[in-house]
Image (cartoon, rainbow, N blue to C red):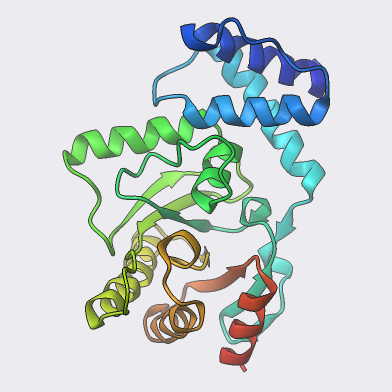
Length: 253
């Protein structure tokens, strides 16, 4: 199948799968098709799916990522020994593991086409990621505590693994407990990386954005914690916004 044929096949499958959407028509335009496919994947609950769907989805997502352009972390220049700063789309980064700023449910963002990193990672990893997260949470039996982390395969992302961590949500002033919980996110991810022999970890800006942790303070906690606890693990600080890039560039000297 061509990329367009895969996209239409996936859309039609997902529309048939859910009775609520069976009367929807496949849009004619490529951009509208891509948006509908992402929305359908975002709202799909965690459940198994057949091999035909997975084969088409995996080929489609990997081609989409290749078209966006993959960056190999091995080619990055360190900002200081063992620590790198990279601005770009974390779903296109080839490294040991990327960090997902998850919510306590840990199964991804269900808001169609939402702009959060949780939504993007689940979209381009594929539906397998939500199912893997749901299985971990079923085994755990309760929501994920703030400051902890879970490890899953990355499925169709160019990295090997995804580390999912729940950062603190800020309501009003940042407390000492908020600071400690954010630092714990970084420590938990680094500990899991060491336990699983993952050589490099790319951190997003945990708890900023939707969780309202002030960017500069969050970056300071991130850098201080990584410097203290990274050990032999190489760390990439991934930023998307220019403001965050400037902050990390200053902190990393």
